[in-house]
Length: 149
Image (cartoon, rainbow, N blue to C red; front, side):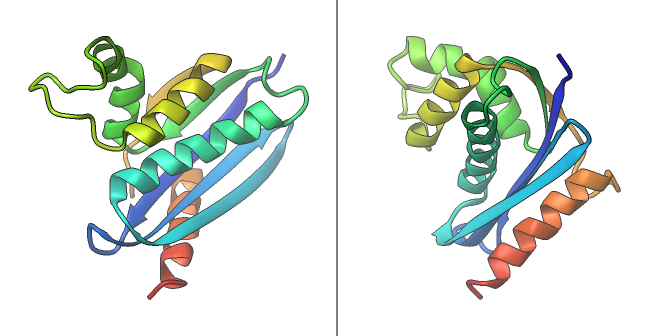
């Protein structure tokens, strides 16, 4: 089974402000780009929404869910959250180490549900470093933001 490669990005102008997200799913030699946005959101919500959207594509495409997936993401927040922090948050009833409610819990729950259904490797990549598909995701994201400005 060949691996599926994903790139994601999310962002906003102002925080909060108009936001957008973009993803590229690469499978079987084909690239599939998707994007979306919101009028008033945060950078972290858009990064999470991008990851959720990407994994949703995998779960909802026949034959994809059984394949290994690598998500290349430039958000340490999402990468660390889904691979490390989420275990503690869930064990503490969705509270942080300082006993405050986890921000964006609704999106973390969705991402966790999708992540658990798949064989995902999360890989952090440096943003704005000339990585072709990361840059494409950023362009998709910026195009979505521009729709709300």
